Amino acid sequence: MGLVRFVGVCAATVCALSSVSASAQFYLQHKDLSGAAITGTEPDVGMALPGATDAEQRAGVAWNMRAALNVAALQCQFEPTLLTVDKYNALLTDHEDELKSSYDTLTKYFLRTAKTKKEGQQALDQFGTRTYSSFATVNSQFNFCRVAGDIGREALFSPRGQFTRLSLDRMRELRNSLTPWGDQAIVRTGRPLPATLPRFEKMCWKGSDYNVKKCGDPLVPVKYAAR
Image 1 (spheres, rainbow, N blue to C red):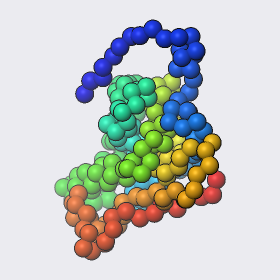
Image 2 (cartoon, helix red, strand yellow):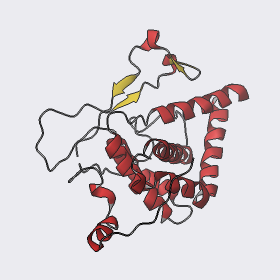
Image 3 (cartoon, rainbow, N blue to C red):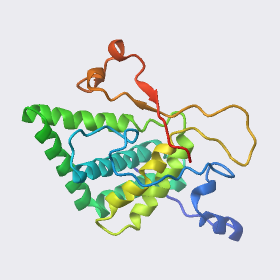
């Protein structure tokens, strides 16, 4: 998947603005979506990993972040200045060893907690599918793309071995970005729609397929701590 590159001449003012953070990429003033660092055990940041060790929980968060930046690379190309594709590709190179370690840790977790090797592999595949689904950006694409772009940029400047730490520090902010908010500098009426995540209960899934008849609406509102 390639990006069209071009070189142009711009006025000094425009060039200066281009070096500023992408905070005003979509809005004059965006919602402050920052949040506290997580441990990986929080119920509203991704799939639960029952019986997981601290290392396995951290690996789950790192893999969630990698999946989110992958989604951003696919869904945020409408705003090329965010460079989400380039940042994601650089992530795969710069933090390759840490990502592999996270995946290996998750693989061992699912094999350890499953009855058979086949069931463990199936559980790992389902984890990946549901993780990607949890970053649906239909209601809040601008906020998600802006935050994902900023996290991708920070990943570029993070020393190798620190991607998991970055993921723990900013996953709450990324999850918050899935709540639709508009421009904070312009008075608006109405309330934002609640952010949603897929239902993760085992009974609601058969392989990678969601059982609508048994569990109804696949998306449930996410409750966030007051900020």
